[in-house]
Amino acid sequence: MKTFPSHDLETAPEASKPLLENSQKAFGRLPGLHKVMSESPQVLEGYQVLHKLFTETAFDADEMTVVWQTINVEHECHYCVPAHTGIAKRMKVSDDIINALRDETPLPSPKLEALRAFTLAMLRGRGNVTDAEMAAFFEAGYSHQAVLDVILGLAQKVMSNYINHVAETPLDEPVKPFAWTRK
Image (cartoon, rainbow, N blue to C red):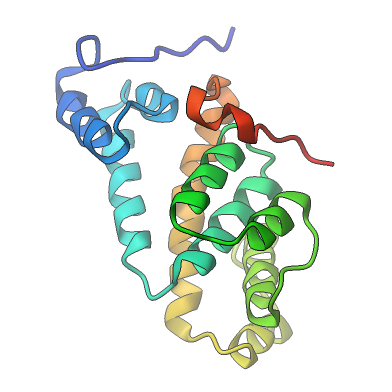
């Protein structure tokens, strides 16, 4: 049985309540993922901290979306692909980029495609990338810091993707129009 608790501000463990309040302020609602994560205040806090730190990297909105959605799609996360579609739209990422990531078709720029390829290499290789993969990433204009920032994004998305798999987190109403399954 995979039924996981899904808390609100009243039922959450005491240490999770201020974290859920942060989520409420940030999103104007409580995302289902955060409701599930709140069962463990440490998980919810860790996720919020990783998210905040990833958004403070040198990656722009398009690049953050490429990292997040590449991982979400590779992990076939039924919750995060639609959620990050909505986030990308709020961040003014073009539909060309959003759709290419969701459909696993070529991205509109070689640099973004190099970022997706490197993120996939990191993910599939569990951090073991070849010299050629690293060189291609650097040749596309990325730095050693970007390598580390991709790993930060991976850490964040592994938490959410895996939790959504085990908890079978239902889609939130605002992102239901962006429901996704791999083609």
